[in-house]
Image 1 (cartoon, rainbow, N blue to C red):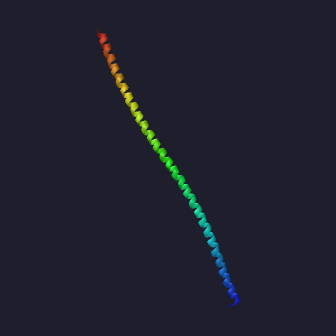
Image 2: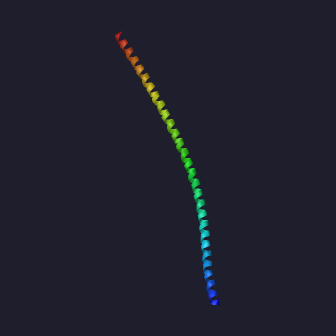
Image 3: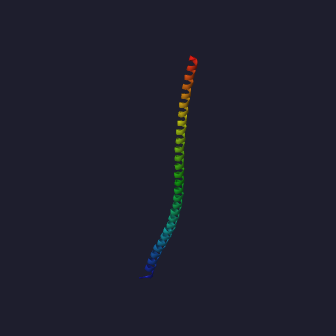
Length: 104
């Protein structure tokens, strides 16, 4: 091979070699960025998971509170009904006593 051809061949290999090196560097940087992004996503997922747990606990507490309120309202309604029945009995007794007093 003459010197000129050898020089062109080595130059071509040098260009491709440099190109491969640049591509490898870009790939390495991309891989590192992907790794950082994946770690960031993992941390965000942990945060979301904690938030979901807090929401779940809050929903359970609200459900329990609503159930307790419903039970309390039911007891109040029973108390009002009992009071109404007692008032009716007292009213009937008073009406009966008034009628007896009026006849006497």
